Image (cartoon, rainbow, N blue to C red; front, top):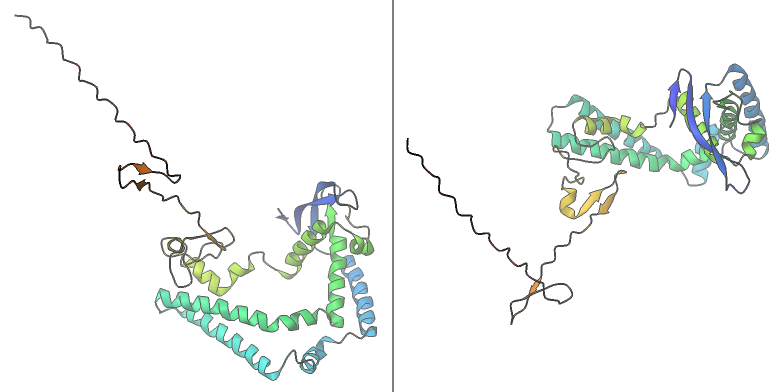
Length: 295
């Protein structure tokens, strides 16, 4: 679990002792903001990677749209759809900000915003993935990795975990590199682990008790519901901590059968259910007569 201390953040990760990754020790690490020297070294890596990418035939970012159109990965129709989705999302956001409508209508608007945002992500997914293959995309990636290699240090003595950038690239301690990279990205670019919760539609749902802190839909009484507002429990389902629907455990609602001839109760195995014998009633104790003393 990472914690923020001034311009650094801490985390714990496993470091393997052997290449087979069978034994490991847990260490505490610190990620610091890159210094000027760190940025200078990372820029050198960027320039080398950029030149190598161009020499190997990588396209420039400015040519990406033309390339995608040539490969039928993008078109004017998709460009129009992209613009329309952005407008539709903004219009619904303005509706939530203005208010003046029923809460049920606002809930529907918020859910529509989420759907439109998902459509937008799907639409630009190809463009986003191809951008990483441009000359600038490759250089940006290597530059960031260089910064990670220089900014992750042991908490105990402040020494860098990686000897140099090449050591980072050849390391099999993926837990250290992944956690370190995630934390550094959050620090440098202001990324938020709770990004989804900060989206306008989700902020609205949480604020008006229409979703819980894990973005699971609820009614005003805090009960889990579907998008249509139907109670999850009425469908024989439960919601796990990640918001996924699971079948609820079925309760044993079996009742014994009644034998037509004898009237005996029969269990699941066809055996007679022994009726509980009534406990004998205790006879009330006779009260002793109280003696009277004449005055």
